Image (tube, rainbow, N blue to C red; front, side, top):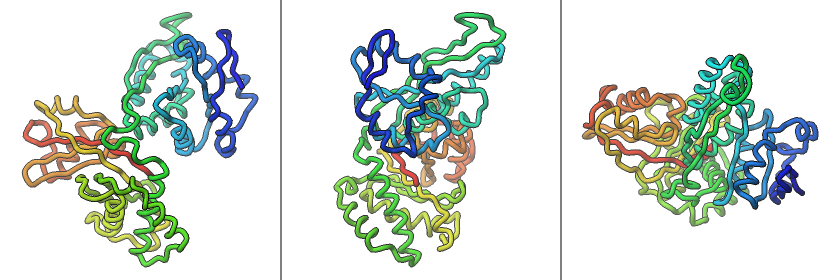
Length: 370
């Protein structure tokens, strides 16, 4: 099949047809094809610059964003270009539109999809933009603003304008020192390993077939690689336990097994997990890259060198030390606040990060969640 534009035909990639075999996520909607133009406005640009390519067109409405993200991620390879097409604010006076669009852009650049989704009159396509942000978080892509303007800058009056921006995401497919050794299938196996380990510790019998399947899956050599790991437990969106190791002294499977027990039963901030809590917990596993030291002159310089929503941070001073995973940026999005809480976690004054007396290291994570 093809899509036709005034510049010629664009061939559909074979995976477009395969997606339709997941009817709970993808189906043909004729009305959308006739009325929605977010894809067709992009196509001439692609035809002009890329010349020969195939396309997988996806129009989204309200949906399970996590499942959609996972489905799209399975299609990625080193030659895949992902485009989220959307305009920004609609029909506001010029100055108000500029202010609102700047706030939307800031949220995208901070990879803060949760606030973006809650924001009204921000972007018609905030669902596909959110999918792209989630992929960026998974793959360590960095966003950069290329251009912003609105219709008041290009045509018509300024009393009611529509905003537009171009933001590019760039980076390796996955962190080089994690590479693509672990994929979503490996992640699901590690999540099951963590849950079965906790079940056994609670004295809950695990179905034999399920246990045998896990044991067979864990023979994969990828689980023998050595990485730092963290296991996080949440209940109703609140933390219920989080323990891990930064060093790569353990294999991935051994680290997950050990830290699942520690997060459930030995986190000093919480009582040991109870049997009736098991069905409520949601498990998240983080696989760490090798920590790298940050050279900085002062607090302001340190803030400039930290990547919000991307870097996990380690602070050390003598025997004191602590770390926050990159996921903590969601609760503490301002670097000053993030660093102050991390200092306090390490038993240091909240403003200790403002001078150059601390050893600071950063790392990234590949994470999987139930």
